[in-house]
Image 1 (cartoon, rainbow over the protein chains, first blue to last red):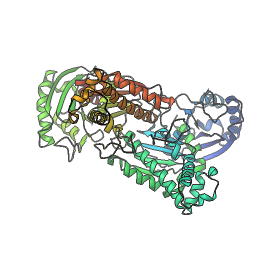
Image 2: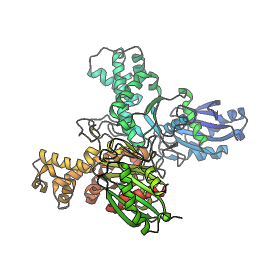
Image 3: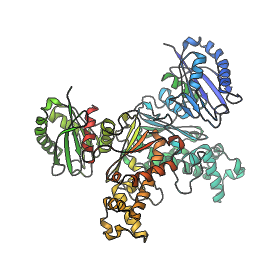
Image 4: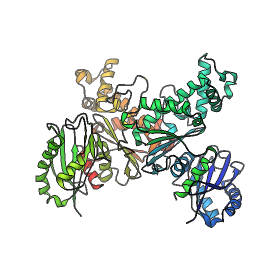
Length: 318
Length: 318
């Protein structure tokens, strides 16, 4: 049996590669910039060039079972990246990236979106080991999700299932979302949504806060996190608001797949109970009693390597 | 191969049994009243007594592969009816009905809730044949649902997945639902919800309508349907309101499982385009473009026998 898979965390800025064993240990790693290429062909060429030394390091291509890719706008069924707004070489087309890497490396390659990769990673190496039904929510620039039913990721009829960041949470006067609709969960509970909540609360209250020392237009969710850790009440209120909505959303998600757990991933989870407690309280307040047993967990995968591990786990599934 | 299964549509008032072949033809049928028994044991005894003649009619118990039951508050994993408010012999306890029938008849028995049975029936005999990903919505006294992902019904961690009637559609001033929460889809789009919409519209507008000839407290969704067929504008407005909300809800459901189709079942679908067109229009207005390809279909199973067929289909799945 071949002992390794390659994981590629393809982000808007960086592309991080890792060679990973079955226990989730990263044996070798490398990275390139994602942008700066005129075409997907050039991107794959540069990737392979970066990969060759680390493949040699672990014993050559014959030790590699497969490659998994986690990418924005990734489609599992087609193995493609489709109209990804932040990728210069894929913003206006369908790029069959899995096939391109497979030809270049001579191994099977599977691709899925980053949040789905995180869910598979959690199931393979993390807190969801042994779980058959759970929902992964990634709180980053956007709100991503991966839904696992009966031990398998839900891809749906076209490969685009599991976009839970785009359920509508506020139907009246909802915030404008990046998807051009109003009131999406993502518009409130992503890192950018949290920063926007901060600006709104600063503008509409006179509550004293450490955040008032900052330029409101430049406040980030990290600033909110730092203020909350120092005990700032307004920052805690922001987490209360965000957690309350996430709990409401999870109460709706529960009726769909009755998950054993909701697993949260992303910088915001570093706030620990400041965010998790409001989520749990709100969930119990809003969910049907049938679903009260669900657990609320934080991803166990190390932040910096979680995305590579998630991507590599997609490779084990081939 | 044994050519038949028994289907039991266990309703609050009647229990209808059918013996069904693999093509969905009902070969023999019988029924008893569901209530009027002090215990589940008595109910099963009376059921078996009613079944014996029709089992003989098709050639005896050796021709029967299995039995499927569709029941309110049915739990597939445990084969039980759990705290069903409308069943005197199961309102305050967990009744292991599948096991009880299995012992009495000597064949395998599976049980699920009525909406899940409808979804499996549609997949086995109806418009969802060959579909791998779809969502069934049953518009009756309540709003039930069955979610099919990758060809399998979603039961979730505890057997209670697929209660889509209880997503919250109105978070501010939402109607009280039977589940004691406010703003559920079911409080608006069930038959009782439609009757309530009629009463509200009659009370808050001066629009002329055939419905004004009726006692407002006694208006049913059937009255609305009859008025709409006669061209009554207020009745059409009620369907517009109901369809609009169903379309909004389906737009949220789509992000979960990216279904190929939404399939509607229940008396309300008899209104045809009067209800289906507003649903489709609203869906296209509210859903992310990724999901615009979903079809909106009406169940192909005959209303009176659909529930028995659905239940029998659960038997084929054993």
